[in-house]
Structures are given as C-alpha cells and as structure tokens.
Length: 418
Ligand code: DGY
Image (spheres, rainbow, N blue to C red):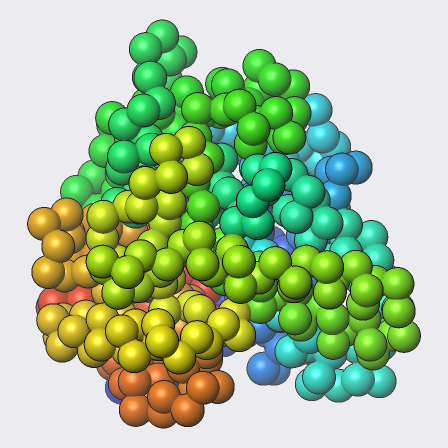
C-alpha cells in the first residue's frame, strides 16, 4: 500500500495521507516528527486538498493565520499545545503569542495558493478571499518587505535557517559558521529520535539554530533589530523568488476584489524585484545563489531554489542561457531530479535533508516556473521523476536523487499534496 503501482492507486493513497494527517482544522506535516502546524507545509497541503475538497483547502489557509502576529508576521510554526516529542517547543520560543508560535516566518507561498484556490471556483472563493486578503495576506507581505530588507537594499533576508524552510542547506554554511554557539543552553534533540540522524542536520548546526532562537528571544522578537543587527542575515533565492511570485499573485487577487490601494502598494514591492535578483546573481556559478548580507559573499554552490527565478517571473536573457546550462548540468548529474544541491559539489550529501535530497514541493514550483517559460522538457522531466520516486518508494519527506530512495519522515503530507 505504501508503494502504489498505478496512478489511481497513487491518487487514492495521497488523499488518504492528507486525511490521516488532518488534526481538526489544520494538518500535520507528518505524525511524530512534526506534531504542529507548519506554515508552508500547510499551504501546499491546501493545494492538495483543493483537488478534492475546496472548502477544507480554504479552512487550512484560515487556520494558519490564527497564528498571525499583530505586526503581520505569519509564524513558521503554530503550536497550540506543547508536545514533548518535539523540540524546540513553545516555551523555548517564548513568542508571547496566543496561540503560541515560533518567532520567525517561512517562505510565503500562501498568496499563490490562495490565487489557485480562488481560480478553482471564484464564486465560492470570493467571500473567503475578501476575508483573508487585507489582514492576512497584505499584512504578512508588508511585514516581509518592511522587516526583512536591510536599508538601501532590496533583497529579502532570512534571519534563521528555519525561516528559509531549507534548514541545513550548504547555502548557510559560511554565515552559520559566524554564529558563535558558545553558552547555548543545554538541550535534548527530539528529531533524531524519529529519523535516522544521518538524514538530519548535525549537532553543530543545531547548537547554532538554538543560539539564534535565544538571540531573538532576548530581543523580545524585535524583528527589525534582528534583521539589522542579528548574528545571521542571508539573502535567500528561495524566500526571495517565492515572495516575488506571491507578490504578483497578490496583485491579481487585489484586482479581483478591486483593492486599488493595495495594487499600488504591491507595485512598489515589485518595482524592486529585478534589483533583488541582481543581488543574488552569481556570474561565476552561472546561477542565483544565497548571499550573506553581513559580508556580501555568495554561498559557493548551487541549490535547486536557484531555478525558481522563472516561477518568480524573472527572466533576463543574458543570464538565462547560463542558468539553463547550469540546470542541464545538474539534471545530468543525478539519476532523479531535482537534487536540492549540486551533486558535483563537494558538500553534496544525497541523504542529508537539504544538502542533496529531492523535495517534491520544490520540484513542483521549479517545474511550474519552467513550464510557464516554455521549458517543457525540463519541467516534464522533474514532474515525472517526482512521480517515479514516490511510486517506487512511497510518500516520503524527501528522496535520494542518486538511488531514488525515500528518506526522513514517511506518510508525508506535502509530498502527498504534490
Ligand atoms: C525542524 O524542526 O526540523 C523544522 O524544520 C524546523 O522548522
């Protein structure tokens, strides 16, 4: 049953995983490893639900925003309870929110998903869109554009690897090495009790993740200060491109509800999109790459999110030829696409979380952008490879791009959603 052999069986199994992981009005990423509501997980989940239960899909969006802060931020985890099987829980974050949440955000796929939901049935969607649009979507986008830029620049920073959703990507290695873990409060990890430790971030990384949480907590979660002065601020192609796409979709939603002032405000954000892409472009790597905002150094290595520029609506001919060459090289260097990090790079690790494995959700958005720009062959290859590994191994959290094997959590909701 875990390895469905036909498409119908595959669909049936995907739907039952979404249903099995429902937790009232929201959905867990998977049982055990992630016992709360995660931000971008939830939005991909909504997309999955929209294939067979549009009402439930809207509900998933609405519950995510129960954890929205007064300053507009939609947090990366909404806790609602304290489950001892997960660390770090609500007391470590001390967000002061009700329901309790973490203190950072996550890639803003929500507006794009809400647009998809709305387009599926405009009549059903309109009243729900009207509710989520101003407070929830606009306020959260505004938070990102105000709180995660460094003055004079336009690139969007993440101030914790968890905010990027790509926790242990090599994109953060250099910036994370500059975070001094000395004095971190002793703690016990729980993730490695659920999943093989060789597939998870290292203890050295965890010490720094926790140190960054302690830093944020000590500032009273002053997000502007954390971005400006904190120990970690990296411009992330993932968050930046996903936000650009979300801004464009939000603008279409503003038109749908005739919110002209919002349209104008969104235009001011989009005005800076190309400049933000310029900041991320690395000529020597022939790709967009993460860039440490404290040192201006690019990460040395190409992640799959580099190819989200198409999804973001950024196409600059003099760069695209190079970017396409880099994409083809990476596609040719793995048996299954799309590895989250360049397989020819010394830091590539086919099983360790974001240092190489394939993630179905990234495959979906990269392939969507490629198809929109006419790169059908590459897009289709990514789509078929995603299906192949799921069919062969089951609905895992991520997959080894060399062997195709599943890794991390199993019965994983966002993989089923895709
Ligand atoms: C975890 O706990 O591993 C999550 O990725 C943090 O968001």
